[in-house]
Image 1 (cartoon, one colour):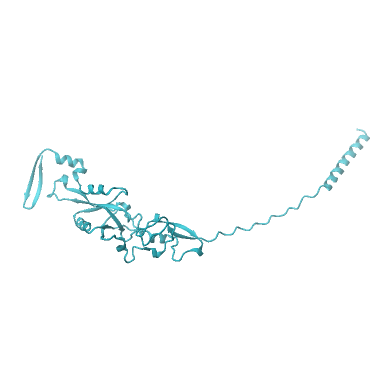
Image 2 (tube, one colour; image 1 turned 90 degrees about the horizontal axis):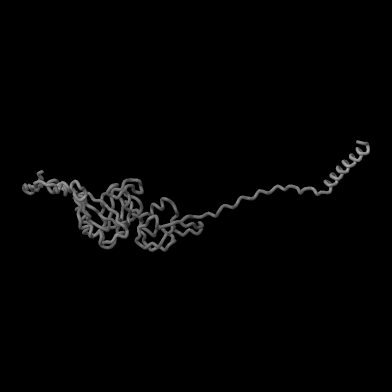
Length: 286
């Protein structure tokens, strides 16, 4: 490389460096970085109060249940006087209460609108004119295992066992429907329309179910208590009353349920009826 070529190369490099410096001086400086201001937190939502209101049209005399009321939220300043605030205690208090006046859907429920089970005059207000209230002792089995609610329509079945001298073996146990289509008005002292039966709302075993009956039906229950065990059976909502009347005239014996007992009653052999004074006894010889 000659000295002349080296000098030209140096001049080119120097010109390039000067051009780059000039370009940087002409370009405007970048804008300054401004820190974003922190946004204030959103304001809290306005306070709302939750009320219990009628979930549907409720006629006077309704035994209230959970499905009869719903929840509505309103500003605290719009809460009507005497309105019921949502709580588990309020719900428990309203279950089974007797509504005293008609309520439109969405109407606010006040304490003066219903009678609670422990209020004076509650039972008399529940009963229809000419009807009576009678209680039947139940347990987890005879009380339909907690499936009976106040307001249900039920049948009452009597099951009794005859003594050996009164009936042969295949007819010794008999079951009969003594009342049909009667209304449940109470389960224990908690007149609540919700699952009770085996466990009441207070968490204890239910012992009685109160029914709305006619005076003649009350007498039948009083006699049936002394004859045997009473079972309560829940009826279908759309069951025809004439079906219940036809069913109430029949009796079911041991041999109707057990084929073994039915065969033993028809087995060949001699049969003799032994009468000793007022006692009668069937004797089979095989």
